[in-house]
Image (cartoon, rainbow, N blue to C red; front, side, top):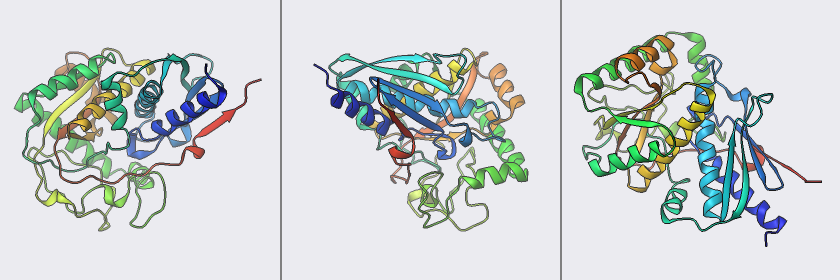
Length: 331
């Protein structure tokens, strides 16, 4: 028999897992309401990038990743997760509801993914020369497919060069835009910061080596000598370049992309593989459309990433659950 205390404990643990999801610039653009057996996931529009992400696409991809964590935690802790995505058209900020259902025994793979939630880190530099094994690449493709998205490893060298060039061009244009730059800097932490959001100074290398071809990262330091001194002086491999796409480009597709992204990232983490994200070209509508038509068979790109092995663990911070969770009593 389910008790109120048991359900509340599972719901809180699910939200605790959710806050560890990746998000653009670690903005953590979500909030949760727990009422009875239901967890509501809401977008926090105050954390949306109004210059870099005016449509809210990246915000919803981020929230989709958090939804995947809720699903994994609920099932691992013994409750089926019954999900409704965009359940109320009159409440656009309500992205999903998760009702904790009947007792269930989590399978081994679900437990494996759940165990990676707090271990996964975003990478922001080059990788070692160790290639990602082909069987693992096939498994990552399968993980994305399970969430109605497609992960396409980019095997063609010319296609990789195109992606790198577009990323570098978009980065250069964005860096010349003062308002765009200020928005990025808002989410950059100086050394010693105690903020539980944004990108910490130790979350990227102080002097990263250029990969070949070069995929630039955001300039979070913005002219300061911030950054860490991990193994990045020796790691300059581009790694495996891949693009996550969806057949459509609706809000529902964006949430699905986030769930697929987190699922494949956790599976990769379980095998020692980490990911670096590159959204610069996807934030320019004409470049994103060019990629869709010329490289991706008409599918909509939701994330450009590089996958590989690295020696450092990286840093990350998260807001406490109390900052994002509202608990309501049922009547």
